[in-house]
Image (cartoon, rainbow, N blue to C red):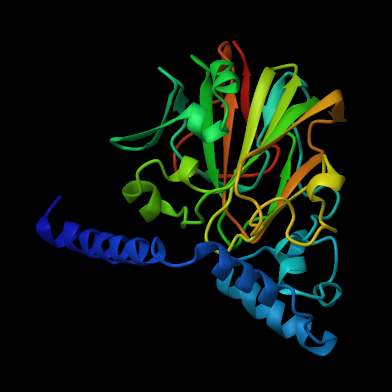
Length: 302
């Protein structure tokens, strides 16, 4: 790489390092809750088409996939969490193949070795810290992981990559730093530092962990599999609550039955999902940086 080619990237990295350093000193949770309250302000019906249309053009949202007309969304949050029209996504015919739980951009896929996952070149992080549970992390030693980043243009509901049941879940409070490419490169152990909500599924691919990672301005992650815990009707969902100081775990007896493709959680704005699979599961040929769609094949048994 020539100096001229490298200077723009180096300059951008310096800006992001400064931004991240500033954000680390600010009250991220309070600022994110404030932004969430703004996203919940009702927009007059006569303005919705122009407001959401402009936002969609700026972020390249595909409006042909919406299940509802633009004026049916009362708030920015409602538009962000918009449902897709029936048939907008498809799933593999084989129930033993996991589908992507979200639309998004693929991070680096890889193997889980010595309890570590790859965050970026030269940076790893602990599966036990990510899951908030050493015993759960042991299930995935020697397995595989996949990271998917949701940009503002992506669909923000999270679906079950495999069928059968949710056997446990865990909310782990933490920071709310950005999770974009610059933050992934520069912030050590970014994903286990941020607040997160983990659902553990048991099904045809064994145990699968679906980790929804909060980020700056992602003030809520709501749960479809446990409405009493953090359903959309609960103000603030499970995450980003001022009174949440310690990890909270739930076990489900009997397990909560879910079909592959059914809704699990929702990001109220956007963030990142990390998937962990047990040994014996192989990832489909996936390229870092590729755009993936909900339901695309991502893993299967060897």
